[in-house]
Length: 604
Image (cartoon, rainbow, N blue to C red; front, side):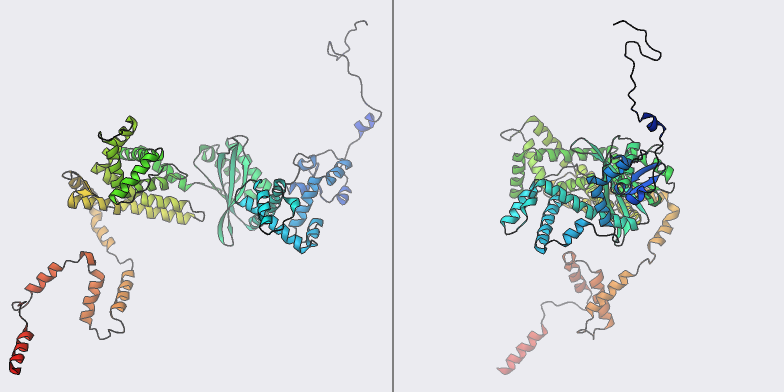
């Protein structure tokens, strides 16, 4: 074989391509395929728009359709055999059945007709099967539990058909259940004129980043939060999250969601609320009137966390609570000793709780309250662990932790601050729970925030119940729940600080003090009068109608303004009785006794 020079356009070293065109090639090259209108009469599901044909039924059922099909994506290859093969595919037939089931005026599909003709006894059995499948889904159990429940029902007198006793059958049943329940939500969403979306991201057990999309709309029973979709995020940036939102509404079949979207809620991540390229900013370009809201519960947690980092007392309290939790969480022996000490002291005790949780505030509030309630038991146990006479002696780490906790709990300043924080967290934890309610509205959130603000402001000048309990006990007898304190400097300093705050404010707002006093005595409410009328009806009842006005006034005054029974000082009353008489009291004199003696003498 002789070497030949390459032909024009031929790559050196490679054989020239031979023409593989058949005899029909010239016809195929000249032929221009077009969409034929008569195809719509043969295939009522085909739609021709913008130079492409696609299946309208499959596009309206994205969860059932074969999304990789060319007739779902849209194609310009207009061929009759393509339409014919798509119409015979199982995925298209499933979508057609679901489409007809959703349309109340359409003809009843063959599958539904067969159910209607089903034997009543078998129909009831299938209902029980569906109940079992739904139980598996609702209780978040694996599909493999379905055969076990299936067999249990049959062993206890049920007669479920054995042909569906498999986990795969359960998976199919749950798909049907989902379609029915999903349509109920979609029906409500179609009626909603406006709605908002709430998103949040997380990574699942399979290390897949997901974005959960919730929708809040107005239903007949009021505002409702509903789960719309969860989407796997291809990219964790704003564009990826925005694609997940588009996909969620696309699967739901809500094409006009941008026209009805009025609110967007998320956490404070920059990818969501970034002012330039965040998800909210990108949505605002298409929806200028959109209101973006940073989750109020999340903002509260961030604010408190920042405040703790900026306050040394709070940091020390947080470290002490963490040491308490670590001591009893990792040592069952220490927990047993704690309960034994509680029994010996005849006190109640709870195990110190963790500070971490889905929402930080309720957890730290519970941890602080446990320390306040179990104070003497915890102190006694940590003093024992820090003692040099303890045998066997704990490890150096435990001894160091015990000394740190003991020093903190025996410091009066720290103890008062602990109870002050308990009073503060009472209001903050309540606010956090209010913010977390599903039915919470903007007005309710603002009202809850204002209430919490004024309650916290009052703690600047008035002690809360927990702090007042410690303060009064230490001030009266120098101890709190059996623990002695040195109060020469601490208690007077508290009073001085409180008085200094009041004096400083009066001096600072001197011109407003008089106005504020007038403002505070204005009769804003007359509810106290109504309570007085209720007391009058109780005092002057139908059995005491002859009670005069003077006596009624006295009884009402004692009923309303009198002290509590345990605070009543009878000694002052005795002194008043003794000194207010016009003549000298003769407590040993009994005039009836002399008359009785005289009568006895006459009888003799």
